[in-house]
Image (cartoon, rainbow, N blue to C red):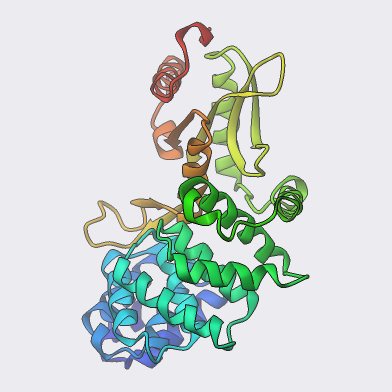
Length: 344
């Protein structure tokens, strides 16, 4: 990849997109090469066709890389070419932008208008694609009411949805219920449907089927934080705790008598972050950005009244003294709203 990175500026956009797709499909995502690829794509973004820039965005999404200028170029390119874009390319781009938490209101409006017509005219969008685009909108904090109403009616009319689509639909319901109550009442999912989605979500996002799998380094850090937390606050500490809503939280402190959560602690690491390839990053791949799905989860948990603190694995590794670790946790929990009388 070192030799190829020197020639990227001479490679045509379609070949750049194919290179990015091929490398990430086999798990070859070297940071310096993809940083060079991002610079080459940004420099010639006006020459990319919509499907080409969407493929590059999807490759970065798959590799869990983030490059600010590239994502802004993706949004700009998609916005100018939305009329002719294929639904699958729109989905690729919107998913990558949602993961990166890049919000372009003009693009979102254009996409919503375009896909609303697709749904009304019985276009080629599959149910899982419709749901994925609506979810991407929700993850980026944008709500296109006319498109959402049509999309939700279409999804409700199906008697069978894929497992992942059902999980996404449940998160969409929670988001709209929390942040768009007034208009969502006109197309809200029935209570029996919501309960079915919730049971499905809890099963597929919890226990052995949960999609959050920590590597050994992260597992060790989470265990150390949990043990330190037991010396700081009065309560039962559980790791990878599933809330009633179905969301998995890294650490939860519950009352010793009962199951109600006192506070939750999220720990940012490889399972929740994108690696930044921005030139301004202090060290390539070290600067991080929280994934859109994680931001959505945390916003919903806080909206429902959960006290939530967030810290990073990197910060914890920088602390060597046990007293420093305990002091840090106390400050974080105080800031999250934990009362003084709950500390040991």
